[in-house]
Image (cartoon, rainbow, N blue to C red):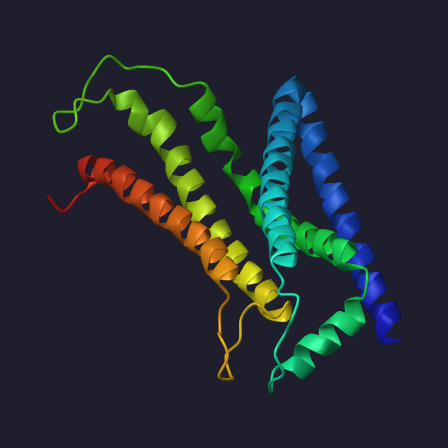
Length: 223
């Protein structure tokens, strides 16, 4: 009964969403603005797809590297049971697990990007106003058209890379490259190098965020 109820709920929710979508299309079409509706829709789908694929590619590559850097010999320890059970469960399906995991995270990471379609359209249709701000001597059009999307892009990249770093560290742990207990080396040299690269990119993204935030001084109401 619970399964049937859940299935009916999903079905009704989907039908309501489809009905709302079709109603919006009919309204735009009645005003001879069907092209606007399809244009916005294609932009939303395109943004979601591009960012999802980007997240998928970066996470998949890092998980692939984590698998390649797995130590051939894992010293016995209190955490070995967890690692051994994981490898028994996965077996030779590491590629499939990697792809499924990257796909799930990518769908979540890219789903919310479609809501920034208006920032993307402004960014791709940027124009100069011919007026420079007195603080940075930058055309006012930059603040209207480009800054919102650039700020979102850097913030999204930073948040995404934090998630990727956490998932990658978990993969290294399950592969035996990270140990929290035991007298042996807790983090292998290869894992340190891999995670250091990710942390370095995170530092660069944070620096880029600070660099963009300085432009917000011109929009501050606190003086």
